[in-house]
Length: 296
Image 1 (cartoon, rainbow, N blue to C red):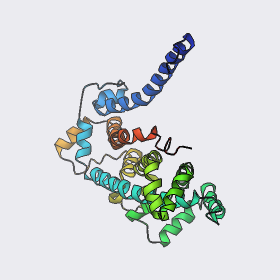
Image 2 (cartoon, rainbow, N blue to C red):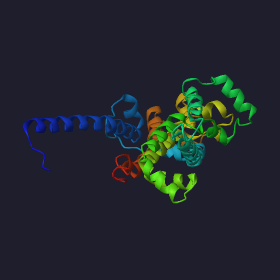
Image 3 (cartoon, rainbow, N blue to C red):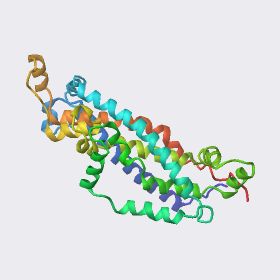
């Protein structure tokens, strides 16, 4: 059906384009500014002359980071954390959301479990008790302390649960009549139809692990075990430029750096993985797999 191209619709389209363009610019311009700062020399960056393009192009900030082994070590820890943490998170989220998506008739104590999980969303154990529990479990200064304490996000469980509840019940009944078990129904019926929700939660989980810095700083005693976000936070907070034991060449290179350039290069490198991953998951956000799967 062809939509009538009226004056009101033209005005709406123009307004829509303008608003979306402004939103896009508000997202893109800060990234361009950070990139320009990282590629500018110390004088221009410190003087605040850099806007959205580099002034006196310089790669000294990136050379400074490349020579820091601690930076690449923290990147490796973050990548490992994102991969292992996301797999564990998604597995537990799916296994928790599936039974909770059933009615209280099929899952007798569903409401009791929902109350239990809901309490954890609004009432936390507190920072010190949590630290004491983690210490008693011998997780301090361990890689697993970055993953296990937040292995199950109840907010994500609720999102996944509601998506499961939206899947037509007739498909589950048809699979059960064919002799499928709950495991088969979950992995062969529900999950293939839940790709939009899975992709969204996977992206949220990956971003959460990648950007998380407080747990590394609070639970890690060794800086060499810091994930990248914690490493960058300590560099920015401490303004760590160690000039001891530097060669004359390194001292000369240091003069070409500024705090803004170093911080900008660190921040820009930290967002590259997310910028790479997002386009591959974005298409699932708007794809409705369930729609039309069952005809009434």
